[in-house]
Image 1 (cartoon, rainbow, N blue to C red):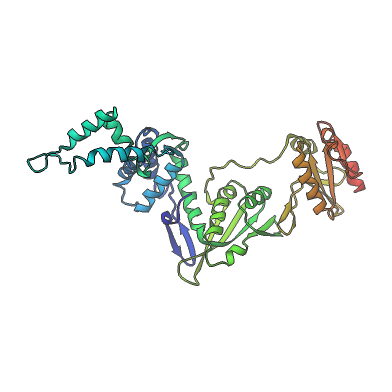
Image 2 (cartoon, rainbow, N blue to C red):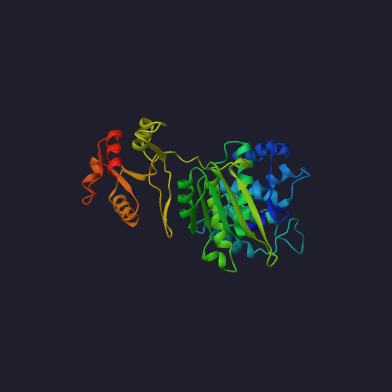
Length: 399
């Protein structure tokens, strides 16, 4: 991510509008981005300072390019780069030795005379002979522990110029969220993924059902504090996962440096921001996918199958069962499938089911996992490699 110092945004009618480069308004930046990538792709062995200067040269003639935008590109390129470092302090040891030897001939001058007799080039050559290394090599390693003089070892890079520009656009939105105090997300699809990443980002939440899905509000004790940066950074880290999902819109309240003045940041899936994260898989396992494919889109005995159709929450504990079955007469039954397992997974699953025991949840368990689940409910559905529609319908009618 970018740092707060690299954020660029405008304020319009109570809204914050992060800097964004588009093909319609900034077509020339596609070429600039390709040149910047070329600098890093061919820059192995060059110092960080040299690489940054080269990026500045790429954008030097661009009239519509503030300095912070150039520094932001340097930061994003560095994020995908690996630099040689000096963990053992060899550079400091080398400096002490070089400076100790040079001190005896101080001061060094480029053109010696009768007053100052020590020529810089001669002294460097003498030190190089004593150390048994070429001076060019000594000069390269002398300040290898200084960040500006770290040398590029490898560059993971971006797939293409468009990907770099897309990452820049997302990074500026993330930087705008650093001072966010709350975020509300309305989700129609992929709400399980949204919740999963929100929990990974340690965002506290409240959930409400809407006509089209769920409304998640992310805030918490940190938003009540005067310093909100830590919680805003968590929201910023959550943003790429949200962008990878479908059918959502977001509203964030962002605190400004002016006391008492907050602004809003609004986004939606249709805004065209592209995440570097892949889209979430629709199914967690092949067992679930095979069952949904066999069931199809039609109702069976009045039952409609909905993939992850309900979110159960209890305080900050959230559970999204694999399937929701909804009958024409209004009955609703949930189904959780346990196929792949580990002892830790089984233990966590049992705790979750116990916490939500007041809900009508059927459990389908693979035969191989049943030995690790000694206290299964009597209505548990057993399966070998595939879940039977007939067995599920039988349990639904008795649920």
